[in-house]
Length: 360
Ligand code: FA5
Image 1: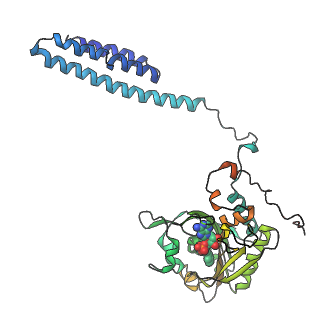
Image 2: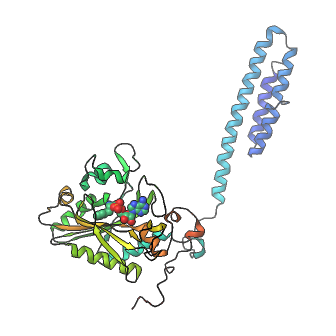
Image 3: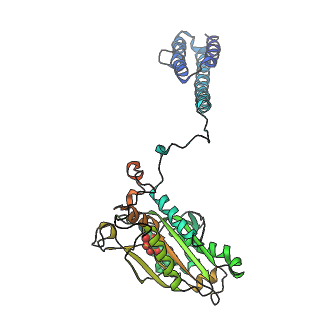
């Protein structure tokens, strides 16, 4: 009896090394640890061992049992890794020179609109800047003349992370960084002209025109003698280029602590033709692009002299622009992951009214 556990261990070691697949190991587990397995058989045999030797014999069996359990777990892990490696090795290698199969995917409509707006502004001398989705309280609020406890923060509740970080609620959060980046070239006579698209996050009550995750595109222009006329010119040019036709817009006063004066630029809802529908909250108008003259405190926070320089800023609601551009009635489609809905948009999918042409 005392030799049997050692013999069993030896037998198991021989077999476990030959087990090449998970199924083989499972077979071993049943053979050795199953109800009618070798270990159970040894336990049965304990009955025949004299009482004074039972304890020692039982311990030996238990040691072997634990050894087998551990070795089985180890072998399963090893086989899993080997099987994964086999899969990786057998995968077809990626050939960058292969022609692209256009049927494999499509651009997201927001990407299409973003690229279009970027190229319009690039053609007017704007640079495209990148900015992180995670920012901090200073950049998102304080540098924008929104001190702690300012009521304007209520409209932009967001997801707060540890160490004073948060998910940015608007692309304006990049203003301070971009202004600082180009301050030196501004002072050497080159105006700041930059756009910075990005994803924004807000604790929002979601409906047909509000998402908790949406895209904006910020734009700023700073130089000596920049005025509201410059702002209106750039806004009009952008909208007529994007829609390739005259769009009814309205400019009304709007309050944002980081601009003075501030405006709300709304466009007549293209889904209902201005009659009122869920996409425009039955108002016939869609808030699209608030804007205004950059507040002197914002320029000062970036080290720019507001006595010498002025500028405008706008925050284009890009997801809403995509709704209008492609006639999408509900904003939730964009984050839905519904490929059937999202793959129907192409660079050509915006159809101009028949009686209008781009050249006209
Ligand atoms: C702002 O975010 C300001 N930072 C814009 C700005 C920039 C003003 C520069 C002045 C100067 P507002 O919260 O209104 O403002 O958002 C701007 C645009 O983003 C809205 O007009 C709308 O088109 C879009 N937007 C805002 N919230 C949402 C939302 N929850 N879902 C979809 N689009 C939204």
